[in-house]
Image (cartoon, rainbow, N blue to C red; front, side, top):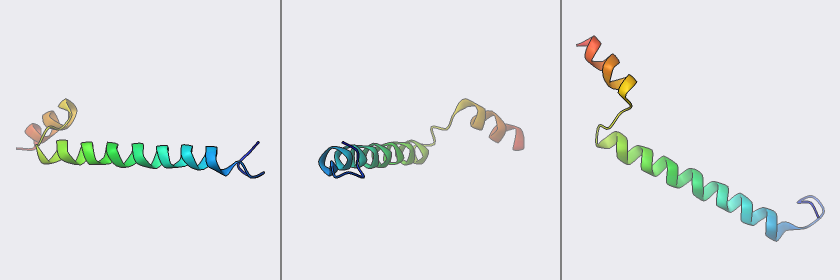
Length: 50
């Protein structure tokens, strides 16, 4: 069955998993940004500006 036809349990479970995955990824990236662990490309461009 599809989400439209009423199989809400399965599709809502997938939706909640996607939301949870997005939130945990955002939290991890925010924590890394706070520790100043930027990607090497970002670090090199920052050094060039100085």
